[in-house]
Image (cartoon, rainbow, N blue to C red; front, side, top):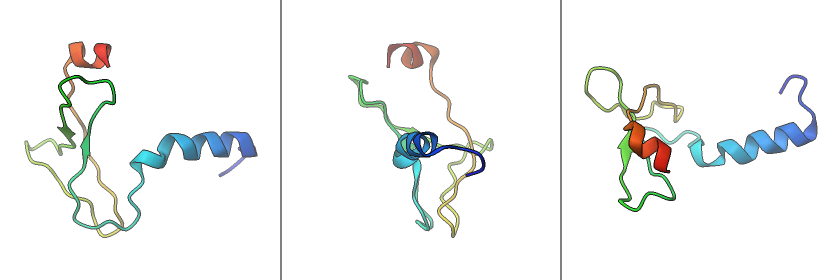
Length: 74
């Protein structure tokens, strides 16, 4: 990973561990916030008001829309 030292690599791995889905094909991707009392799930969107699934490599590209009030409270 380039010029990163071992502490930076460990920190990176810790931060991405919940986002890794290696080779998980055709999966729906959702996110929830730990501190959300409503336990609302948010899905990755692709800009056409549809929700893509992961590709053959477990990758997905898109965006999420989260209300500002929700982002500030969680």
